Length: 80
Image 1 (spheres, rainbow, N blue to C red):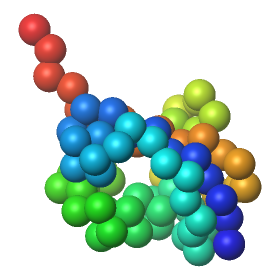
Image 2: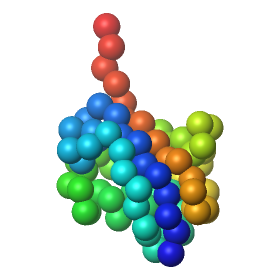
Image 3: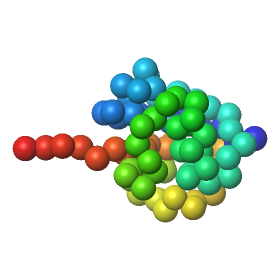
């Protein structure tokens, strides 16, 4: 089990109903974690539509999770 801190923005924050939370997970990668959360929170976006950052640095989806990581899933943002 790994304990990580999550931060949500934009659409994901609305769907999660919170801007952040700490979760305990059995997921081993960022992609696995997102899929676990997608099911639990009802996120509508696929992982491929997002960017992900760990400890303030963009990361690959296959990065292993470590206790205490701060993870941000970044949805596409419309601008103009």
